[in-house]
Image (tube, rainbow, N blue to C red):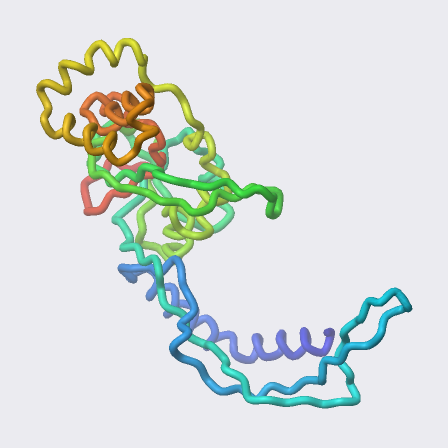
Length: 286
């Protein structure tokens, strides 16, 4: 190991100028890149042939309990040409925004950015901003911990362009820096290793009651009389799902979620980090 480290340090010292040049070129590519591939799958249509060398796998009798054990016999060399899959295809590609907005309540996210040399600014005044927001449609918590976290898996999102109120001190992360790939992979909630996956936004996934059944039901008949599309959606759902057709609470929940009344609850399952998709004038401080 010490010989390897010695050779590595010697090579780095001898080629420092070229290594720095290549690093600067790579940083520039990341700064100007418009799209980022965030998830991949193995391309099983393409492979290379690889001569693989090893040893025969043999089974031997166990210790008199009827069990056999397997091992590689180093006295029996073995080799064979095997398919070696080298290509992956992107399954999730995201176009970078002009900037992300991180509300100041999420200080733990900013600590991560500080540790990874991400540059950000803070709003100097309160303002309404047109953003693209994500709503978390589905997520499945892991049953086992990984590195102290029970990851959120199978995340599905929907997006909505809307005006949101932001406040003096909220964070603006411009996506024009050498850390762009890290920024996008951390803040896009459906990316495989996003901060949402790693539990940093778990409070937004908590369920809650968001309307009074009795108050909404008294208003429901008026809604159904006035909105033919709403009435048809309810009838179609009842026809397709017998359990739903017999459950009044499910029906009320369904109607609430697809009616304009749900706008008052636009914070439910709202991912707090938003995307600013076009360059705008922002009052930014340090």
